[in-house]
Length: 135
Image (tube, rainbow, N blue to C red):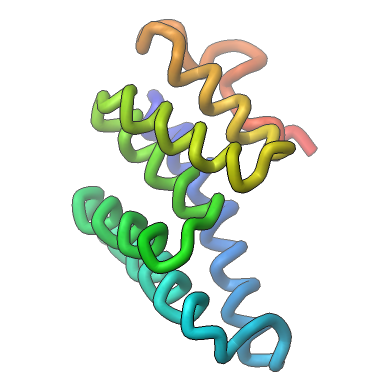
């Protein structure tokens, strides 16, 4: 059941990645930034790995994206994968790191609160979806 919800939550970052590509092609953003290119490349590789069902490769690519340039999207997606694997401590650490970058991000606050609950109590009722899915 969590996997189905995770799939829904993963769709938004795919759209964000596509927006980054479009903006880069349109000449917007910091296309030539040496920090952005590797982070974006690794993030997109992680999305491709997820599309193929290779969660371990996705985690490695999200980690490489974060190493290249820490960013909220990569922390969020890696945290979801860690939760899916039962690695609650790593998921909580990623949510906290993401909140340090994006302190007003309601989805990080939601995921952190869910990660701190017992596994059987997560993603139920009004907490089944992230706040961004309700907009």
